[in-house]
Image (cartoon, rainbow, N blue to C red; front, side, top):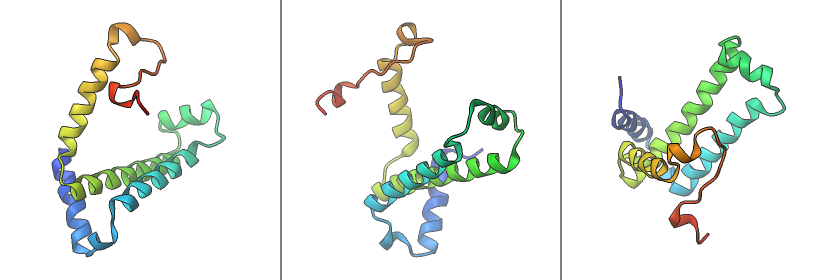
Amino acid sequence: MSDLKDLQKIAKKFIDDRDWRKFQTLKDLSMNASVESAELMEIFLWKDKKFEEEITNHGNRKIEDKIKNEVSDILFSCLAIADQMNFDLEEAYKNKMDELNKRYDVNKVKGKIIKINSPDNSQK
């Protein structure tokens, strides 16, 4: 099984082998992540609950493959951003999950849909 560091190395090699680093600014990589996210959302646009259940139950391999491709495109953008900024995405993710665990205490939010602003976002 690969960890995020291995995946980050794969993305780095892919970019460097093609000499694309000079084209991939942080701005463009972040926009690419957004575009790929929009392509993922488009798969579900105007679909009903039955459509989602069909995918969840592996009843539509063609759509399932499209979803996997779009999610992988989003992940590639994230890995490329982490590589460009030279940070450990796995560590950043674990830190984020620690923050979310504190903000969304399971005893307070279980079974509820609520949004709790982080202290650093309260000024925005």
